[in-house]
Length: 240
Ligand SMILES: C[S@@+](CC[C@H](N)C(=O)[O-])C[C@H]1O[C@@H](n2cnc3c(N)ncnc32)[C@H](O)[C@@H]1O
Image (spheres, rainbow, N blue to C red):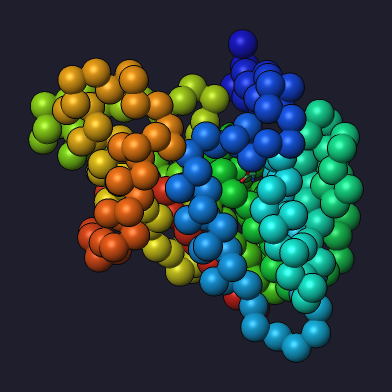
């Protein structure tokens, strides 16, 4: 099966299973919390209302949270029909055709969260280029290929086998984000929940969001000064 088809099948299945529950996008509550926090911090400070676009909005939880701020008018586009059916501010569109017909600088901010990794590299470049054209600020929270190598370096040091990327993902090349500022998200949390976790006798019982993950997130919250270990990066840029 082609990459595009297996990727679509995966998200269709997730949407069917989870409906508008944010867990359908990622079951890791703490990482989703960090993503949301990063986005709030990068919202432009301007007078008046802010027009925001979520590219690949999934269940729409970020759109909802942003719209809780009376200054923000956030719209989402999402290609998976099941996710858009019951959501007032998320509309069914493929990223590229939608962006291509938008005027320059239509939005104050356009963002995508774990969306570019669902496309071939050539499409990632095309979508990002259009996002930079239609918005004054662009924020991408995406996995980069080199990031997983670093995480696996830690696993190797601990005598653990490498974690494989999911076959329905194409981690972004770091060079895609040339000219963007960047920071990693949840380094210590990643170390604890994607490496140290496997040193425990039966890691299969740990899952997500249980006691171990809560302790790891508490540690991560208090420890934000580590060289990148997480493969997840935030990139942002004000467009010319
Ligand atoms: C990992 S989910 C992330 C959803 C959401 N951004 C979030 O943070 O919860 C990836 C989403 O991107 C959507 N997607 C992938 N390629 C797309 C495209 N070309 N146009 C619109 N949506 C796309 C998928 O259908 C899926 O809902």
